Length: 278
Length: 289
Image (cartoon, rainbow over all chains, first blue to last red):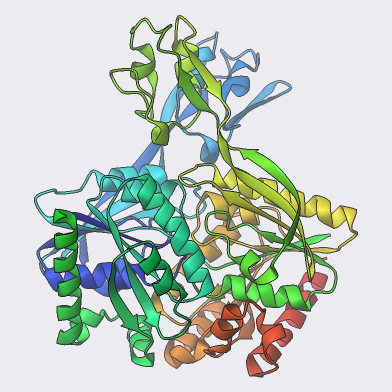
């Protein structure tokens, strides 16, 4: 079973929930798809054993062949190529590697080269098979890194995916083809507003989902009222406690700190299994 | 006219609450919500929309099956696997490159506009505001960020405001880069957790990569004193000014629930500290020419 943990709003506790579920059930695979800011390993402490670069291909223009006709830059919808007077400029960060420029070039002046934009790291911690992706600083496109990461999914295991915040392309890429999605929120107006956006995304992808309310007690009950009205199951409420915030700040997972939490997240997993069977 | 962007790397550190507080302190500013993925600033600023603009992100392929001769060239050449062997478009995968339309020998494929969202120009009780909504599962949030920033700049020129305050998205990728390129200063809101410290280092790297001066605010500093001093040491070593240290304070949440900025909601220590931070930021903006 593949479970994605997402949220819409950042900082609601995705990583807390994802790492604790993994630690509670054990014998699982963990993928941190928040490749812009991956934090799960701060809590899981996997020893990284393997690394693999993620590259994209970008065009290279042979200026001996190029006659600056501008067809390539005209074709490129991403503005990754520009012809200015007798010069051609390539903007690698903007390129989506579609291959169009090469096709339209009448002089065969375009070839391709690989460009590293990030990497995947793999390691183990107790019985968790751990992967995360890291987008290089200054790079714009998270999607290629997430795609390579998702190829590591081992369907024979229970897979937990830590999803980046937001609702756009990297989120869709991370969640798609999951069996269940956990949406983590907090009981505040921002939490509720972004939860509604996240609900739209998972409904759009037709993935069954439930909600975990983190920092329960800091705000109001509008999230619960909304979930009831929309018939969305609330899988767990994590209370607002200074102790929990402190453990989080030090990179200590709740499930490693107290048996009751391990049990609690184990129950969440059982509940998810039941929900998926429905 | 100057631009200040509030970012954080890690989500949920308090960007929007702090931006909203700045909105009630700034005397002559325009506000822009560039977290177009999950915009929240409007929940506090309550903008009255004056103008709505359709936003078309990248185009999308549209296949006319009645013309298709099933040569499968589009399927072969699409690098995004957005066309299956039965020549059906997989909408979510299409990145609008138009290679399929180019290779189709019978012109059965057209690139059409997709309605990706809306950009708004609004008025708030603190001044003009530019914001946007990206439709569910749409791409091109970086492009929409640029639209919002341009709208904010035009507003500033039109209304003769000398500052644009931008609420940025989390992360370090495309929408973040679009939110910070060319601005005069970024404020990075962090918190004393190992996760946020890790993310702070990465987001500072991005700001440096694009040569943008940065200052830091440590929010919820009382959660972990040891980590707070770690951040202070790190910033000192890297010559980054810490403009504010805000204790953990539930006033932030209370203000949010009452849909007010912290400054409007309370006169307490937190509001005092944010005021001081705001004055420091104005000074830095002045010094930066």
